[in-house]
Length: 473
Ligand code: ZN
Ligand code: MN
Image (cartoon, rainbow, N blue to C red; front, side, top):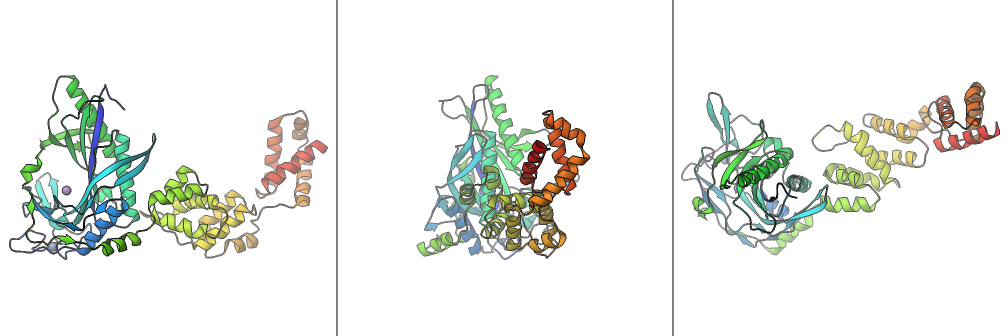
C-alpha cells in the first residue's frame, strides 16, 4: 500500500508483563492496583548491595511464549545491564538481555481484511519492568510497584507495511499469550504495550531513517499512530525535509505523534553482562516438557472449527478466548449440531458472560442437550435462545423444561391442518387474494397461522400444509 508514493516499513517491539505472582528478581507481589510504593523491597528499589535472584516461573513463561511462536530456545542465555538514567528506573540500569536472548527466530500469523499475514520474530528476551511516573498538575510522582515486574520483549522483523497489519499482529500476539496463560493481555492496565519502529521509502529503494513511537496501549492507538507517522514522514520528505531518528509518543487527544527526544543508539546503553546473575542453562528435556504442556493454540483451534463447518467469523471468535473455546469443545462432544452450539455460545451466552474472559455456569451436557432439541426441530430458534438464557440460572434439564411447559414445536399433521382451516375460515378476503396470486396475502396468512399456534408450529410443515390448503380451498 502506498501513501503519496511512499510505503511504510514497520517493526514492533512488544512488552508483555508475565502472569507471575512475584517479581523477576525478588519476592514482591506483582498484583495490579495496589496503593503506590507498597509492593517494594530493597532489591526492586535498586538499593546498592542487594542481589537479584531470578524467578524461574518467568523463564518458563518466556520459553512457553517462544515455543508458541516457533522460536528456537537458547540452551544458554545471559542477562545484561542496559544503562540509562530515567526517574522511573531507580538502579539507573535495567536488567535485560542483549547478545544471548532466551528465544530467537519464529513467527506470528494473523488475519487481515486482505487475507492471512505473517511476520518473523527476531527475538524474545526477558527483562524487568520500570516504575511508573504519574504526572499531576502539581508535579510528577513515582510508583515503584511496577519496578521488577517480569516482562518479555517480543521484537518482530520490520516486515509489516500497513496500519491494519500492525494492529492485527499485536491482536494475535495478545490472543496467543492469553491462550497459553503467560500474560493477561490487559492493555488498559499496561500489561501489554507496543513500541512501533517506522520508516518510509519509495518502492524498491532502501529504507529511510526510522522513528520509534513508544508505549501504545490499545490496538486502536497502534493503528492510528502507524497511519499518522507514515503520513507525517511522507509529507515531510515531499516538502523537502529529512526524517530524524527520534522517539515519539502518540497523543490521544490530537490523534498525532509528538516528538519526545532524539533516539539513543544501542551504543548509548553500554550493555554489559550482568555480574550478579548466572547464565540461564536449559536442558533439552526441560524445554520439551514445557512444549508438551502447551495448550492447543488459537490458530489450530480456528482451523479445527473451520473443518467442523463453522464460518470464519464464528471460528475466529471462539478461538480467540480459551475459556469459550474449551466450553465449546466440551459441549460439542455431545451434540451433532456444532453450528447451533456456536450460535448459542456466541449469542446469548456471550451476552450473559460479562467478565473479561468467558465464564458460564451451564454444564456442557445441558447446552448440548439444548442443541439436540433445536437440531432435531423439536423446538424453534427463539425457544432455543430463550432456554439458553434460562439455563444460566435454572438448574433444570432442557428436555424437562420443554415437556413441562409445552415449549415443543407442533408437528402433527392433523393438529396443524385443523388450525389452518380455522384461520382460513376467519380470513376469507386473504384467501381470495391468494387465489388471485398475491404473494403478500399468502405471507400474511402464514403469519396468522403461526400466531394461531403461538409461534410454536413447525415452520416448514406449516408452510407446506398451508400451501396445500390454499390450493384445495
Ligand atoms: Zn522487591
Ligand atoms: Mn525492553
